[in-house]
Length: 457
Image (tube, rainbow, N blue to C red; front, top):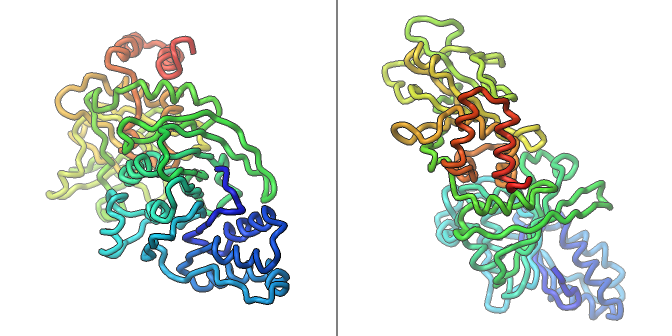
C-alpha cells in the first residue's frame, strides 16, 4: 500500500503474540538507519501501538519488542516504551489526534455476543449476529486517518455472506478495497481453518469502486509467490455480494456475471434449509417403513454426480421418520431441488444438486428433509423453469465456477445461492428443450459455457 515506514503511525488492535507489530518495528528501523538509538526509541514510542485483551499475549508482545531492541534501549539509556495496551479493543475510543496511517493485523473471528453498548456502537456494520472480525474491521475504520490504510488477514466470508451485508456497505462508503489477496491453500497456513483466508487492504476515504486481486501461494514461513488474478468492481448496491476471481482464469467469468441480473427468484424459486435437525428428534427415527412413517432424506441421498438415491448410509442415520400430530411443518409435499449445504473448495464441485423425485412424494404424500440439505422450492404456483433444468444448471461446471466467485466458506448458504447469477428465462428455453429430448450433459454445458464465459468461450 506504499507505506512510508519513516513517518507511518501503525496500530494492531488485536496484536496477540506480536506477529505483526514486531515485523513492523523492524521495518521502521530498517527505513531509518541514520537515527540514533535514542531517537529511534522515541520514534517507536510515538508511532507504534497495539491493543490486546489477553494480558499474557500482551506481555509476550511487549517482551518480544523489548528483547529485539534491548541494545537500542541500553545505548539510549532509557527504558523500553510501553507499546501494548491491555484491554478490550471494542471498548477503546479514538481521540481527535489518534488517526493511524496503517491499521494492520489478524483479528479474531467467530460469532460473538456483544454488550448492549457495543452493539449500539457498532450498529452501522451489523446485520444479524456479530462476527468478531467484522466488528474489528469497523473498529479499524475509526482508528485510520483519511487516506490511511487498513490491512487485515481475515476469512473471505465478508465478501458475500448475508451477515456482512451492512459491513460491505460501510466499507464501500468509507474505505473501499484496494486489493484482495487470496491465500490459495487452507492447510499449512492457519490451524483448523474451514474458510478461505485473504489479505484485504482498504483506503480510508478512497473513491475507487474497483480492486485488484492476487493469489498468494505460501511455500513456507519465508517464501511465497504472488499471482495477479485480475480486478473486480463493487456492485451498484454495495451490500450485495462482491464477485471476485477466486481461481486463475476467472476474470472473464466475473465480468460476465456482472451483466447477468437473473436470480433463482426470477425463475420462480426460493431457498430454504431442510427443516429436520435430526438429533432433536432421535426417538422418531425409524429403520423400516411402517404406518405413518415418511422417507427421511439425508445429504448422502444427493451424490457427487448429481443423482438422487434414497438411502441412509452413515452412522446414526435411519431412512424413515415417524412424525407426530404437531410435525406438519417438517413435511415436504412439493417437488424441489436438493443442494448439499456443506462442500469445500478442494472438491471437484461446490454445487451438488439433485431433483427430489415427484414419485417419491406421491407414493408417501410427503417426505422429511434433513438440514444438511438446501431445498430450492417453487415460490408460488408453477415456476418458469422446471426443477430438472434447475438441477442441470446447478450441477454444471459453469454455475459451479460462478458460485466459487461468491462463496469462500464450506457452507453453501441460501443467501449465496439466491445471489448466484443465472441465465435468463429466455436463455433457459434451449436447455429445457435439450432436457426434453434427452440430450447429453455436454450439450447443456456448452450452452452454459457460452452464457457464463462469453459467446466465443
